[in-house]
Image (cartoon, rainbow, N blue to C red; front, side, top):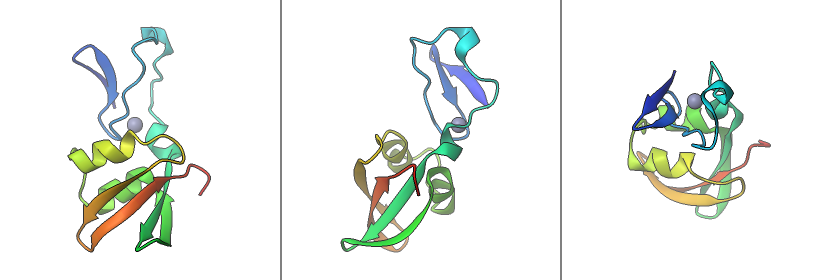
Length: 97
Ligand SMILES: [Zn+2]
């Protein structure tokens, strides 16, 4: 659900924050940002998995955490290191997975 939080339209499902440059009528009814984004998961420099960004965050119980925010704010092609139950992994955003 998209809610206005501190004056910014934010998706409560995926954490996506819509640009403050958008008018109220430009904010979609249903957010699809989380579904569109994909990630590659690298361990020790090797690609071990690909999947949806939101699925990864949910599967790793990261919703609402700093790790989730770091992943959600990745630009296409950028990466970040996050700690999961299995140790540290590198998450690279790739919407084409
Ligand atoms: Zn969303």
